[in-house]
Image (cartoon, rainbow, N blue to C red):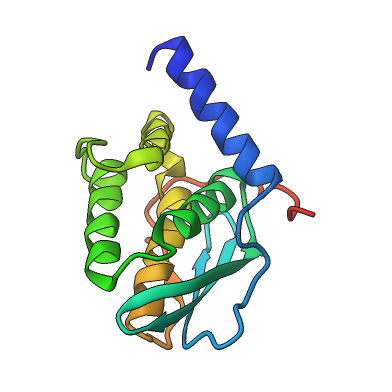
Length: 162
């Protein structure tokens, strides 16, 4: 990653961590919910969606975690708001491929900046936790989404955004 790209990555992550979008929100009338937990970092995210006529009408999240987890959740909420469920599912696939499967960052729009997380392999699970929690919310799965236990420990979580 060149210096300019790395600087942009850091700026976007820090901005979304300091001022997360749709946080802490549980939109009125939300009808899809899920809870995610990364036991290695103590990242904890709950995602709430209001889905009507196959479209994400409202989205919010709450929780605490490292800067990458909070920034990823914030960017995710902006990206899925107003999208139909097929678009959300395709976006999940693209982001997951970009972060966890060495996929290209093509067609991910502003989310492309999250590809910088791959420079820090132990942080990939921090970035993907909100997305897996989103998927569980769409499926109305009652179980807590958890990251796999074979990833090296992450640094301690950042304080919860104010």
